[in-house]
Length: 604
Ligand code: ADP
Image (cartoon, rainbow, N blue to C red; front, side):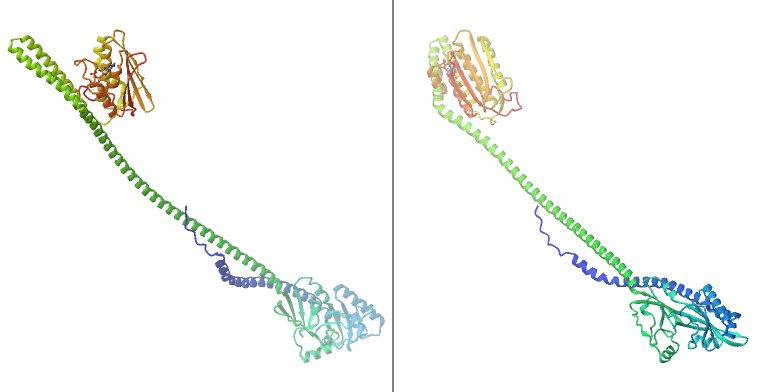
């Protein structure tokens, strides 16, 4: 099947890529949403952490807040301040402070006189003991002496440990006689933080980092310091350095949440690296992108499938159309062929009719030409008896004149015989010359032979002729005319009987037939005298006869021969080697016909 080649279409993938390009900005809101979501989540978590941390810090501080006040009332400590020179009271105070320190978990507790000199301390037995040291420069000292609760954060000048200092006044009645200080270790609150990606940042009122999970940020200023602040720092030395270096935190790199602790003026911040969010966001983006990609691929596949489907439908439709076209063409061809065949059949039938007519004409022409050639002999044959009749008639006249009636009667009788003979000749010729109504048809041989035999049966029996039949059971169909064939068979059988009259018994007549190729051969043999050499040569001539004038006309074989040739057959004359004549009828085989009955008048 020839299909018109389909124009290759441009790949759809390019248009898909363009669609993807247009859809890609959809990822931006996705990124935004994811960022918001993860930031909120992280912020929520960190807020909790921050709250916990602050609560923890405040808890720690609150635990020690009231201690200076309580301890300031202890007589053992007041005794030291009243009489600093007594070793016993000093030792007692030291031991007491150490005990309480150990019990409360405070780092150091120490007792100062109104000049800021440390008289007793919980670390009295340590190498870096505070005893003998003066902390009057610390703000908590002045606060305590003024009757307030002194609070201070700073790095210990002796221990170099960061701590929170609470200071309270020690009273003797209404008079302030000294100050008791409790230092709380805050280093450990840093270590509580652990190794999380989030960082802790605790700044004091100066904006300087005092506690942090990142050691490199420690004691750095998160904002520029004022001159007053610088001066204060120089005076009270809360940090190991007098000029804190600035700390610049990139707000883009960190998610910062801050809480202020009012009572200390501190700010606690938790810093979460934004990379934490970025990682999750990029995961979401990757999933989103992949989903988009998968969607595009699916879309592409669906489009491709659809296109294939459309192509197939298109192809099938075209194939169907072509097939229909071909069927139409083929039908038209067949119709043309059919009408041509019809015409041919018609022409053939016409030609056949034409042929039949022509054959008929031919037979007729042949017969007439035979009659033409016969005419001389016919006129001779008819003139002879006519002449005889005339002379017999004249004679009869004369005889009647002489009253010889008997002789005249015999003459008249002869005249009658002669006219009979003439009538017979004319009847034969008429039968011969008659135009056949039909073209050669299929005639069954055996029934025709039976008919002819039946007509001669009486004479055959009278002559005691033995009939030897050797005919096949199956009907032999030959091309002939029904009447003509019976005419021929009758003539030949009559001749055989004629021949047998000249012979004494036993008289025999053999009939046999066979089919060879396209012909049927019928053999009629008698054991009569056979053909004389002259008869063999001239038997087909009209009016040749070896019989007496009353017995034979000499027309039989002449007519048979002409008829056989007209039928496309042949009449063969021969003598059998064992004596007697052998006549062979060669006829053309015909298709089996339906008619086994005689249809024509045998006397015609
Ligand atoms: P007719 O029978 O009137 O003589 P035919 O044309 O039939 O005319 O025969 C011509 C001649 O052929 C016969 O006169 C006879 O001499 C010879 N003839 C025909 N049939 C036979 C036969 N079966 N045996 C011998 N001679 C025959």
